Image (cartoon, rainbow, N blue to C red; front, top):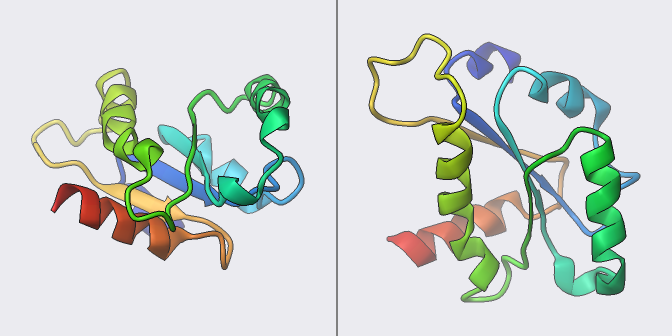
Length: 128
C-alpha cells in the first residue's frame, strides 16, 4: 500500500458504523501524507442521533472530510456526493509532482468487511 501511495491523489478510507474505536492506526499514519476522505458506511446500522457527536470527535482528531453512506442501497443519495466531494478535496490540494497527468488516482482502503467493494460497485452503478 505504501509503495503505491506515491501515485495516489486522494485516499478514500471506508469504515463501518463504529468510527470512533475501529479505525486502523496504520491507516491513520499513512493518511497524513495525502488528501483523505473518510466514508462511514453501513450507516443504516448506526445510531444516527450520534452523528453530530461522531463528526465533532473526528474533526477534533484531524479528520476534516467525512461522508455517511449506505452503499448496499441501490441508489444511496450520499454515494452520489462522493465524487463531487473528492473533486472538491483535490481542487484544494497539491498534486505531489503529478501536475502533468490530467487523470486522478484514488486509493480505497479499509479493514475487512466494511463495504469497500459495495461502495465501488455502488459508484459504478451510479456513474457508469
